[in-house]
Amino acid sequence: MQTYRNFIGGKWVESVSTNHVENTNPARSDEVLGRVRLSTREEARRAVEAASEAFREWRATPAPVRGRIVARAARLMEDDRENLATLLTREEGKTLNESRGEIQRAINVAEFCAGESRRMNGETIGSELPSNFAYTIKQPHGVVACVTPWNFPVAIPVWKIAPALVAGNTVVFKPATVTPATAVRLVELFAKAGIPPGVLNLVIGNGSEAGDEIINHPAVRAISFTGSNGVGLKLYEQAARRGVKVQAEMGGKNPVIVLEDADMNLAVESTAQGAFGSAGQRCTATSRAIVVDKIADNFIERMIARAESYKLGDGMDASTEIGPVVDGSQFKSVLRYIDIGREDGASLVCGGSPADGANLRKGYFIKPTVFAGVTPDMRIAREEIFGPVLSVIRVRDFDEAMRVANDSEYGLSSSIFTNDAARIFRFVDEIETGMTHINSPTTGGEAHVPFGGIKSTGIGEREQGSTALDFYTELKVVYVDYTGRKREGNLY
Image 1 (tube, rainbow, N blue to C red):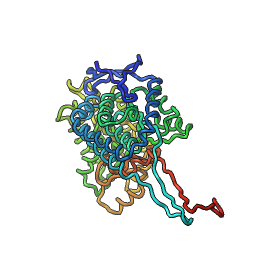
Image 2: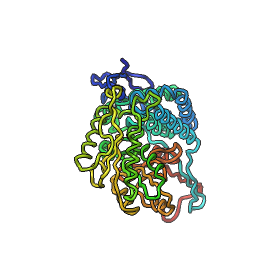
Image 3: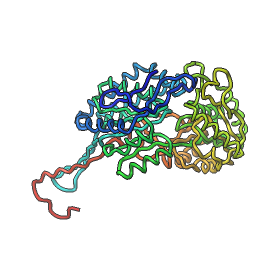
């Protein structure tokens, strides 16, 4: 059985830990893909020390040279696309087409960040003093910790690692223990691209031990995290005690508003894609459908038909539309939320149980689920479920729809379906999310466009696009006085 190894100081090293978990295929829970040894604090400490030792030389490497290495990694990912997609499908569960899409997103991000290596520009600022020159430069922090989740185990690491490296930081990468194979392969490709020893390090282990050691190590000067609110806020509290810069992308409870003039076919199909694609395991997944009462019955009827039409199965089967949730723990969590919805009085109109069929019983498959009669105070309307569950909330009109949409602690993504230009622009002005879509799903994004949320969803600078390097650099202001004289007057 394969045992996944750490990558520390340019060498692949098997953990000495006796604690381990098995990496299984969520479509066939009896198929063991490999063993994960849960790294010790000492191993995590060595990874940080290796990154710290490598920082000075990597920082001194010209940014375009760093960018060329990241660009080579993008080409290697492209060459390895099918292998990566297969690994991703087998250990995370999404369909092969979804995996291919994720790999392409990772390639696009790496390409974009490589290009940014030639645009690490500051600005010149006219001084109010004669014969004085003021300008700004961007400099790296040092060691950056990248802590990533299991739902996008290739794309999310790349959109953290690539800008961190281009900016001149060294990296300690701690992936989710549920998806070790993709993490190992990704680091193999970066190493093959020419990353010097110690510049990129991989540690596979629990957040409570390896993760805790990494984020509290004094050499770690910035932390980029994607995951749950509970873990993210705890990490933020710990880092704040050391004055460390934190970027955290956390939960979402993304609404779609459907108004009476919407294209109903488009609204239903887009909402279903957002709610059930990737088994609902996307931070941008559509969780709440807020529908004007006049058209709600029609919307619900069509949504039931669409949900029941999906084919569930192993993501390696080309005909599969929805794969399993990632593991037994997530499976139980989603089913528990379905029970909570029933207990709170919502009307279960579709799904709500493990999938039937001999080929599905060994996997963590849950039928696409639709609740009607949901009120904004119910837990299924307020808490992130992270599974194929959609809550439909009826409202009187656009104004009530906006109040309900914004009545959430989260603020990641949103969408509206209408052809009324005035209400579209009111929606854009008033919706409390970091990203929004008009007549399209709440999901999706592009490599050259910023990504992130507000309220309890996001802390720190946005990721990707024109903001990709903001978190990974410090701005330094430089004053050059070439008068050759002592400055007179108020020095502020």
